[in-house]
Amino acid sequence: MTTAVTPDTATTGPEGPTPAEVTPPERRVRIRQVTREGALTLAGAAGGALGLVWVLYERVLPFTGALGFWVSWYVAFLLLYAAMAGLQWDPLAVRDRVAWVALGAAGLLSCAAVFDVVGYVLYRGWLAVRHVNFFTDSMAFAGPLSPLTKGGALHAMIGSLEQIGLATLFAVPLGVAAALFMAEVGGSWARPVRTVVTAMTALPDVIAGLFIFALAILTLGMQQSGLAASLALAVTMMPIVARASEVVIRIVPGTLREASYALGASQWRTAWNVILPTARAGLATAIVLAMARGIGETAPVLLTAGFTKELNLNPVHGPQVSLPLYIFNYAHTEAVNQNIVERAFGAGFTLAVVVLVLFTAARLLGGRTPGELTRRQRRRITREAAGG
Image (cartoon, rainbow, N blue to C red; front, top):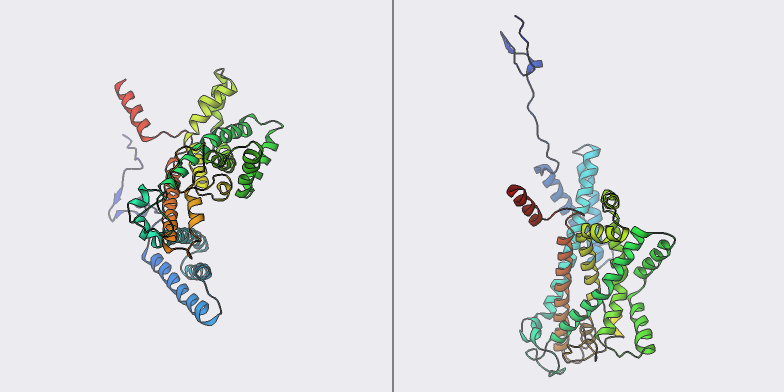
């Protein structure tokens, strides 16, 4: 009888298993493992760069300013970290760690700059935003010398919401249609349309306000109102929606288009029932980003919205102020009364919070790839499969 020895069978001799028959234990590789050496190297490079830049920037060289200080620290930090990492790891690991630290430090500095701006605006406007009337009253019955317990920015908040809503209503269909034309239809007109959209993206925002002011107000006789301001904002938002939507539409898998055409669907039906639903998350991100850009614009509404201290719920008739215009008119009146400046900074903090909320919503909406199912959709499919 012949006995077959399998690879899993361990043959032991008089002195135990031979080295060739011992299976080495499997090691689990962790790419983002944080070690004590890595943490100490990072902390040492950060502290050394901070001390070196402080001595050179503040004591030796005739430089001043927080921006230059932190930029110099960032460069010195990367150089010191690369030098310290080169003494410990191989060149490939050094490049990987330096790239990771550079991106992480840049992100932290960017977040710190954002929080510093928001914190400073809140500090300057805290005396205004701590009163409830700032969010519930307008300036209709408050003057420059009125205390902070009287008057607020309700009319500017409602004006901003109405104007950005109308601008989104105008800009989104045009922007998505332009994106579909450039990405799906193409042809000889695709390049000129893309050139115009790119040029509109690079134009100063004040050009949009001047265009609407010259066309709608001076030529067509439209009065300064929230509708005119929304048209100016739509001119600013439309190229942003078009460019971002084109990128999202282009990354939709081509197999979905081919499957739709194979079933006999037309190009219009494919775009409406296949491409747009698949790219829904990316399109929502593009729209929210355009809204965040438009709601903080001052130049387009400066010549088109007018200014009023009263609450105007009708965007078609009469001047309608927005939060950026409210800030612009009150921020430089410190010589008149400090309370006016406090209200301006309070409106600035409110606007910053709104923009941060919109960008957060854009990040959450854009977290999925085109065609990826949400948790709710996956649970529904699982229930249907279990029930079937």
